Length: 423
Image 1 (cartoon, rainbow, N blue to C red):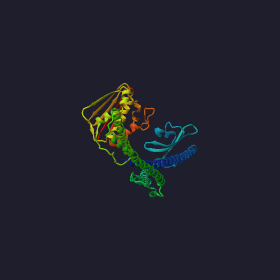
Image 2: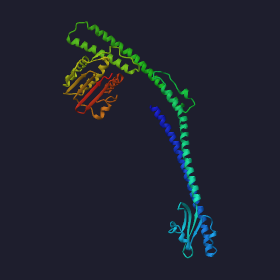
Image 3: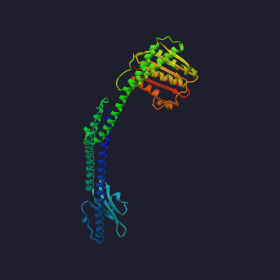
Image 4: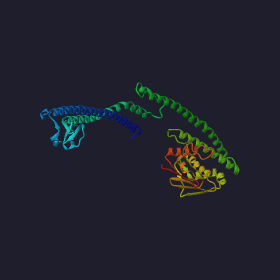
């Protein structure tokens, strides 16, 4: 499931859950209110009725006119001798009114009082029918809450579809945009809808992006021509000097100039390659003798190696020939070797070559473990005058060609960098 699909699902669930929560809360509060009102009304009505009836019966008893036939159906009056028939639940009940007293699966409204002599008088009214009615109402309310809950889920699902339909169309429209296509605008497709404002803002962003890409394209095209041309002229002039008879130091200087111009041209081509989205490659044979390349890099840094009193240890089982551009490998290995040399004093640097990997290990200053995840960031550097470009460029080249680079370092003990060619 993509992030967009997950977001849509989460939003849909939130809409449904919100509607279900609102419906359930309102229905529950309504049901609770109905039951509470019914319970209080019953207690008031039945309590007042039984209380008045007990008072009337008490007056009849005092006047000597009481007769059991005066009682209504489902009523029972306990006094004097028939107190022996009083249910055990009511024998210790204090004077007052009691609603919904359960005795042998029957519900009673009970009123307890005393005569002038202090003898107890108990009047009960069987309200089981009314309590069953209340239970039926409760069951009906429970079913209605369940039905409303199901209705809320269905309505929430339908509402979420209607709400998210423009968002879904908008995301599909964005996903269909080709990054290489310019002057794309989408606001017209959503005019009058809720997404119209977002689409308009996105069009403004696309317009700014178009201008930015146009400036980048102009720069890369201009740099490709204006930088390569003078370097090619310089390299051509050095080629002519190759035929001249020069002494040892002058010949070595000419060779270093030749190599510096070649490296500068390769760097420009690599930078332009990384600035493009297409598959344009560097204009040179994709074949590199790694042993020879490392020899050239060590020779370029020989002055620093001698000044830092560094011992170079090399280990290889056989010649390593890689089907990659020498210029790209020169940039990658050059940056890794330069970092090892600059951070090592009075120590050693080990270079190990295997069939598909290159390892460079030093016993220099090392990198704090907390900084290891940041070594490839553009802003990270350990040098006062550094800009963090070197390792960032190395990482971008590795990512472009599917190489894997691994850093192992410990502060004060050194660093080991392994470059793995996985393709």
